[in-house]
Amino acid sequence: MIGYFRTMSGSFELLSKASGRTQVLEGTAHEPRLDTLLYWLLLARWAVEQNIAPLLLNLKRQAEREARGR
Image (cartoon, rainbow, N blue to C red; front, side, top):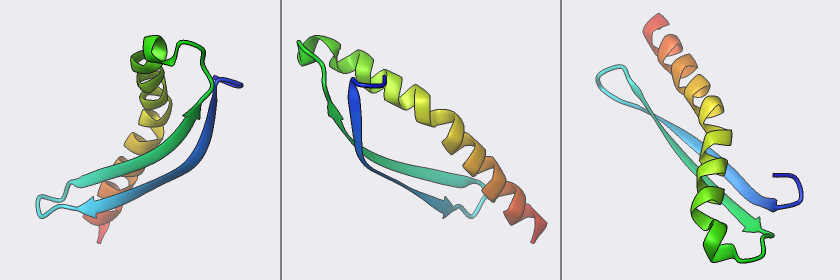
């Protein structure tokens, strides 16, 4: 993805649920640098989601472990 995207901003928010679970809200803004953008847009979005998903899952699990430990 190097050279094809520029990440403009990124953020996440962890929301504690009454069930002890955690909801992760993620927001990113990217500037795609692809010819025929409409052709590649769905694949590009999928690639970005796959790239960030492990990080968000790890944050969610850590937040839930900490909530149980309190």
